[in-house]
Length: 252
Image 1 (cartoon, one colour):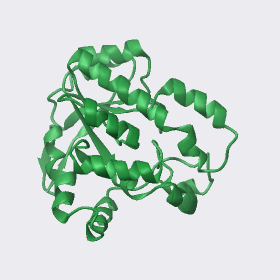
Image 2 (cartoon, rainbow, N blue to C red):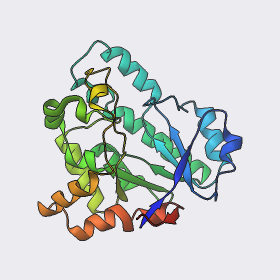
Image 3 (cartoon, rainbow, N blue to C red):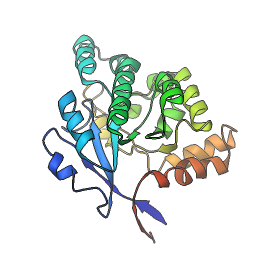
């Protein structure tokens, strides 16, 4: 059995379309990219964010990176070709600024918010104290598994946005997943061919597979006593499903 739904992408001028998606079959929410990533979906100006939060229903999911800081950092790190600079460019502050901003919008407009692919211990610890009932969040299995050593070893194969961070971030994400601050695990499935990745950093596309790797990774973590098999079921299914309205179908 698989449960699935689709997010409708927000732009600065499609609020009228977004107003129609609440309760629509097959739609689990609205997705906002607050910072530039793969593709051209981007909503970062305050007036447009306010418009969406004020005039839509359901749940808003945010890719939380601050566009202003991100562009400043890209200009600063633009000449770097070492992949370790990716986490320095798209740094923790870039993510934290956007996470706090999204949370403020949710609280100001009494709107449900889901912060996708949390990556830093700073964000996780802040949400532990400030999350409230309107906000949920998630963590990718990749960010529970990899750290700076893997980035140096595996290169662009583990390039993604927001980036793989540092050991202390990984351990804090585990802590906040176990204590319930982080609600569920996800895949952020974004595969690319080895040919596309072979151009190297910074031209290689960001993203890695997740659908077919997340369960083996989590079961390996369970075998290594990082969590239990029951936890894997809870993190990946039981705790995740109630957050979204999704249709249900059987896969043969």
